[in-house]
Image (cartoon, rainbow over all chains, first blue to last red; front, side, top):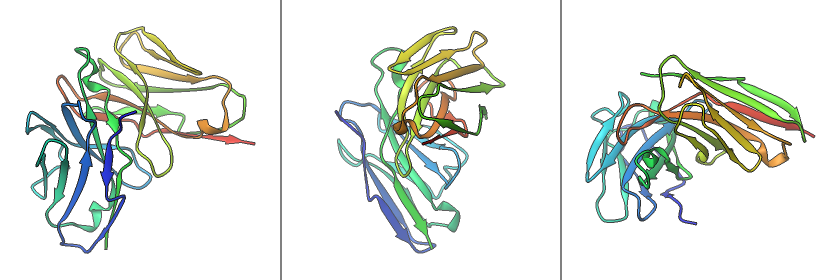
Length: 117
Length: 112
C-alpha cells in the first residue's frame, strides 16, 4: 500500500542552524501539507501546497519557514534559523480528491523528530 | 481559529469493553475525520464523514456526523490491545485544500 515517507526520522541541530526536512508524498497525490506536534500536544497545521504554490498557511508558518517541491517526488520544509521552541515532531501529509470532498482525507507520514539544542 | 473539544481526555478500560468518545465544536464543520496515533508515529486515518447524520463503520469502529454539524462520536466495540493509542478528531479549516484542525485527543489505555 502506498505511503508517505519522511527523512530523517530524527534530526538534532543547534539553535540558529538551518534544517531541511524531507518528504515523499504518495505518488498520485496532488495536495501536500506540513504539520507539527509538540511533545504531548495536538497536531497543528503549518502549511498546504498545491500546484507548486502555497495555498494556505497558519500563524505558526512565519518567515523562518519555507516549503519547496524541488522535483516530481520530494516535498521539503526548511526552517531557516531554528529556535528551541521549534523542537517537535513534523509530519508531512498528502491527499488527492477522488471525490469533490475527499481532498480532506489526508495521509500522514511517520514524522521527523526535530530536536533543537 | 476553530477549536475541537474532545472528551474524555483519557480512558482506562478492560479488554473486550466497548469505547465511546466524542468531539464537539463551536462552529460548523462540513467534514469530520477520525485519526489514530500510535506512539512515535504519524496519525492514521480511520473514518471520514461528509454528511450530517452520516453513520459510517470500519470494522469494529463506528463514527457518526452529528445533525448539527458541530459534533461527532467514535465508538469502538470489543476493544483489543492494539486499540491502545491516541484518537484524534479533525476537520478542515474551510473550503479548498485546507489544513486540518485537530482536537487534543482521547488517550485510550487498555488494562489487562
